[in-house]
Amino acid sequence: MAWCATGCGNEPDTRDDTASGGSLPLTTLSASSDASDDAPADTGDKLDVGGADGTGMAEDGGNEAGCQKVDFLFVIDSSASMEDEQDNLLGSFPGFIDAIEQTLMIDDFHVMVVDAGLIAGAGCDGILGAGRVTSGIGQDCMLVGGLRYATADQPDLVATFTCIGSRGFGGPGDEQTMSSTLAAVGPLSAPGQCNDGFLRDDAILVVTIITDEEDSPGDTTPAPPLDGTCVPADADPNSNGDPAGWKASLVSAKGGNEDAIVVLSLIGDCDAGGTCPGIALEPTGGYSGAEPAPRLREFTQSFGYGSVGPVCAPDYAPFFTEAVSVIASACDGFVPQG
Image (cartoon, rainbow, N blue to C red):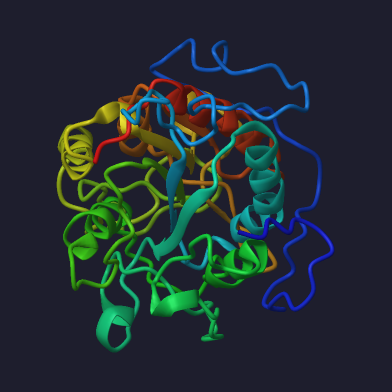
């Protein structure tokens, strides 16, 4: 796969992906408190998490701890309040990929983007949790092989992600973040379905959630103040279930192996003393801040390799830099199946 972080030609000109402003302090929380401590020092050398020959297999042909494959699932909120957040994601992705290239010796990736809400469309384009193959404005992202996710055969991953990750901010206001996540790696990854082949038994699954709203059918605030107050900001149905049930379903999708899952969530944190205020309607007509998201935080932190950061940070690079260490820790003890 071509890792082209800067200077790439022929990139889709879909958005201004330059994040503005300085970095806010990163809030990284993991149920595995030693995740960062186990990560290698930043010496500029790659971390070989496989066997001595770099294949991830012992010399006698048996499985060995380590991972050589990663399936990346990005669940992106495309509602009206997400303009700045999407720009930050697109601006930070090249650095994320570069950090992975510099730290992890992994040569086989799947990268899929799904919308947090249901988008109208024909066939798979109109199914919640199906991988996106166009940008939010309908530009063909030229995914290789007719798949709904990028693979190592994609000639320019950064350009492709800039396209599929540009979800726009005219999407549905009813975010079903967890329903979309679970559908993407559950029924839709079965043979013959929309995301056929995305989820692999012998790969680490990295789920990245980017949303400024909670996922709770219990929110009943039809007329929120939208003045930055740390309160629920809608009365949408959202996803069914609860954090414990969501976790059980995701672990089941990975064959019961929780250690093969990394969950990264950029969400609202005003209820946890974080840096994001509640959602506010700006005089210019845009939105700022984020809805408190205790359920999404509980879900994320229930995983041994789970990290949470503030979705309203002006720069996601520190979050994704730290995420590489979390992924490295997950890879370190991973025993590929199959």
